[in-house]
Image: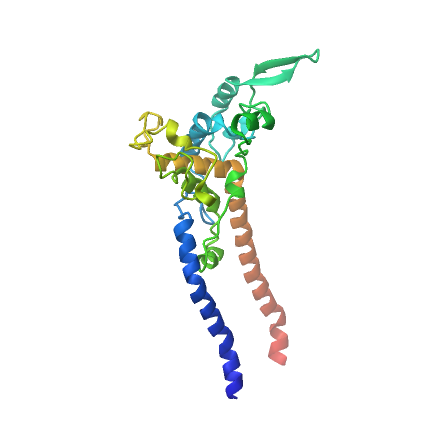
Length: 284
């Protein structure tokens, strides 16, 4: 009897000891490589939706800052689709026309022409080799960046995330990286990047004074939103999340309807079962 009780206590005690021994290692890792904090996102949770105004601001940040290095790889027309930035068709046509697209004419000759909504937003580099020659390594395409980057919250938060369905680690990571340049004397030192050595200097230096942190152009946003590093980082992170998952709003709407149907169907099936088998139970 006593040995069986002891055996039943061995595993819990072993787990407690393992966590106790691992705690200093986790603490040291947190000091060396902090985990990005969860931000408040309009699209988080089962009923979250993209903020159209935020996506429009985020696209402006991408166009003015990020596109100087990174490709996006989405067609212009998606910028006018429901659930996204929802620019008007006229705005998208005007935007596309500001780009020169490589094409061929009827004779098969290479030409440059103004962009059209159906065209993919072009990269400033002709190809990856040209980008690699400029930077030493081609900057990654930002199309799926918000879904490709993630991190572990550690115990017990990863368990909590299973129940809350928190899936926004990608935007959290982007936000953290953009705000992780905390050593002005070293423009490539980033608090949240593995090893703290990142190939990209702070891209927001073109919008903010590296020493004071103040916006160089207070009128960068035309909708009156304050131009702060935190706001700009959140806006572009939200836009990149949309670029990675443009159908999020539709997916959540369909998911809610499916769950509502399944719950209603379960109740109907239960009461149907009771009705069909009521005579059997009565005569049993």
